[in-house]
Length: 160
Ligand SMILES: Cc1cc2nc3c(=O)[nH]c(=O)nc-3n(C[C@H](O)[C@H](O)[C@H](O)COP(=O)(O)O)c2cc1C
Image 1 (cartoon, rainbow, N blue to C red):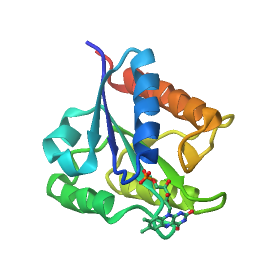
Image 2 (image 1 turned 135 degrees about the vertical axis):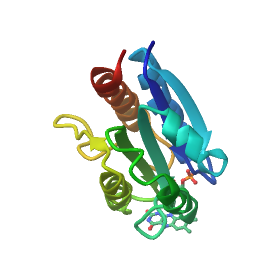
Image 3 (image 1 turned 90 degrees about the vertical axis):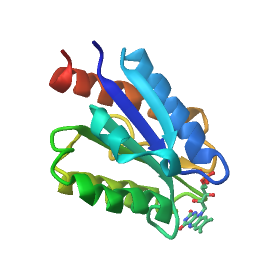
Image 4 (image 1 turned 180 degrees about the vertical axis):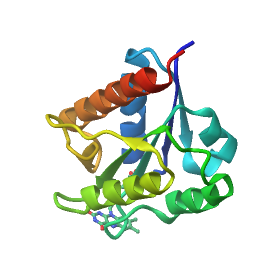
């Protein structure tokens, strides 16, 4: 059985959603079973069922959208149970230097608190995929690459 990858996103104008779809495409290419869900429809059971959880948010004032933080705060109910799962994050902001990487890092920090396992990229977007507005070809390729890499890591850790 292949590993389960959950791609969770919040998106008001479609840019982060397009990134989520590209991340999912990469994870599928790596052979994972992939679910893509808006954060407002994501349950704690979805988080528990996944081997890898990849969260995307638009950058709002240099950090994640409140809707994303809400799910993370709700996850205190399952604190300890996400330990060992693979985690990742991606973000779109309006401009170059708009805070995409601080958003990615803040999501990743919450995953570390959960005891999740993170992977950077020495050759691609180092911390997690970032886009300016809608993902262009470069950002889309980074999202696909990220999905592939994290699904492969989950397979190494959790494949059965
Ligand atoms: C409340 C709010 C705050 C924002 N803050 C930032 C910001 O700090 N830096 C930036 O570059 N863009 C900022 N933006 C722009 C969004 O990050 C950008 O349009 C993003 O691509 C939207 O993603 P979406 O299409 O997935 O909703 C902000 C937009 C909103 C609505």
